[in-house]
Length: 138
Image (cartoon, rainbow, N blue to C red; front, side, top):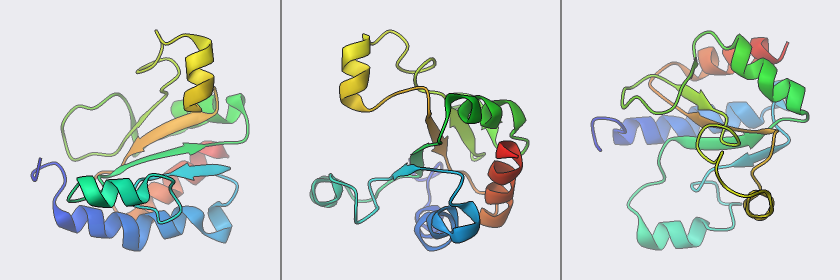
């Protein structure tokens, strides 16, 4: 997996992208942020023991279903697609794309709902990615 996720991408994710996503100007983008490399993630310790890195996948919830759909329709730099194995950033809608066949009670238990989006962070500039997410929300 080194070609998809060089260590420099992981450093960029934690140094530039996640702090910017959490920043005051972006607080309206997400109501909840999930990333295994985040010290606040409940499985952070487990991940440290079992893996050599945290990956470039970030899941986040927006405040409404309509906002999630707007992001999917309006992103320009980020592609609305499941993994293509490239270096570009992708956004997916787990409720329909990757978890569509899972029964409702299990989705609830997993925290997967109509507000959840999953972002695979690629090699683009953090400011450009955040700007794209901000414009998509409107």
